[in-house]
Length: 118
Image (tube, rainbow, N blue to C red):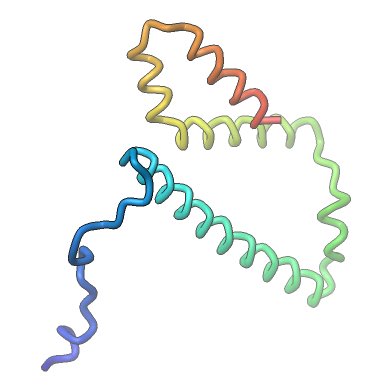
């Protein structure tokens, strides 16, 4: 058996994917949430590594990060980036609302964006 065939990973798992909830859409959301949690966990570990390296190399102390006060310009940039991120993540909901004629749903979504982007 050649090395290239030994190292190949199957593209899809065999068998039926387990269903945990009655509604398949809830299962899909559950899988999405798990993927986001995994990504966030890795990101937190990487940030911790960066903070430790910065402190170990004498650039600044880790508590400087907690005490950092962004300028109004930085706050505006962060808010813009945050809104772009929320829009990307919530894209399917936004598209559904654009197709819907019910404006009460749109208001509800805009309220969520406002709360999350603070």
